[in-house]
Image (tube, rainbow, N blue to C red; front, side, top):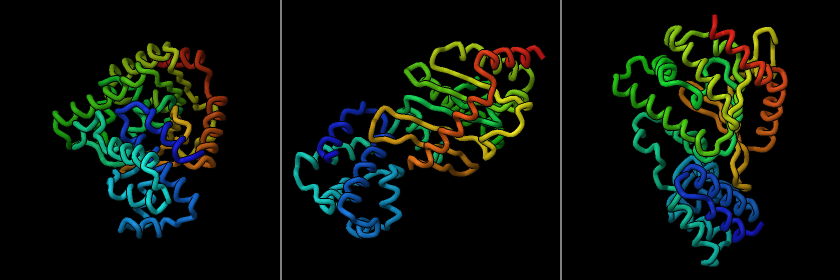
Length: 293
């Protein structure tokens, strides 16, 4: 694929998703660099930075400086203004703040990346073994989960954190497909009291009636399963140049995997989980029994 044809795809992306724009631009810069056989060290030297900075730029994890993009394009042999200008314009758009900017004081940088990806994804498949996925939480349940990690937060901060989580759920109303496999422990573990859990389970029953949402429960009786390593999510995007991304959250950071070998492996694990777990209709009956208990 030529740089010029790639630019056309990049610029066709709708505005408002700076995280994805950064990743798309980074993908193009990485392709241009590797096509020229230039190392990250040499690329970093050209913009007065380290090879690690080039890696972060190519992964879309940091913002772009126009001067850096211009210098890299020159190094990579992209000198035609018709090819340079769209990429430079993309760098400017990629630095625009996302809708969550107003919550920036609450968000670590590594999670801002995820919110941007979530906002641009067309499909998410996720496995959870402790909590209901954030996109499916009720306000009361979300508050109980948030309080676990932010026990010293003020009432105002807690309310804003809950509001942010609820705002993220608007993606389910605008085309996002969500397929979640949750461990039985998720619906057995009481958070916020019996009333909160009963409301949360009722919400799961209601929302799984939507065509774009699938929930499966992995019962204890199934024993060990393919996701013994813990929770993860796989995000898929409409742009052909943007690979599937595997997201794994930790206590104070997150891991993002975008190599096809990694995403293919996790997709295979998710497929096995979906086979091992209760089918969606059986999951509804399972949740109804738990709610009645």
